[in-house]
Amino acid sequence: MKRKKSQKTKELKKKDKLFSLSIRQRDGKCVMCGSHKTNQAAHIFSKKANPHLRHDLDNAITLCYACHFFKCHHSPVEFTFWVIRYLGHKKFKQLYFKSLFKE
Image (cartoon, rainbow, N blue to C red):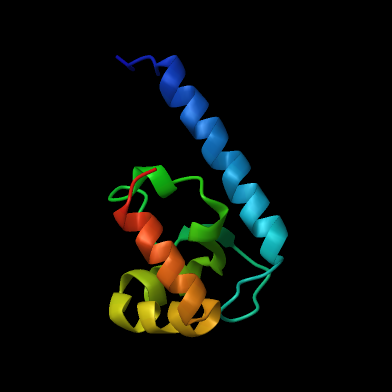
């Protein structure tokens, strides 16, 4: 028997979809490889560990499936260094402090 989704869960899913769409529209392509296929919004700081950054536009970039899966999740240290170069040290530091101090 399927469990009925709560209203809160439905609202969160809707917000997640809108957030993903806005990130993908903002960036227009995978910011790592330039692909226009299978693009998705990728969180820089985990939404699980940082729920207060879940819908923060500064905490997401557009990545294609391959870059998201293979570069982001399989090589997190290298991905972090790439993000620092991509965002710049100052912007990354601001985002890092946002992750530490829940608003």
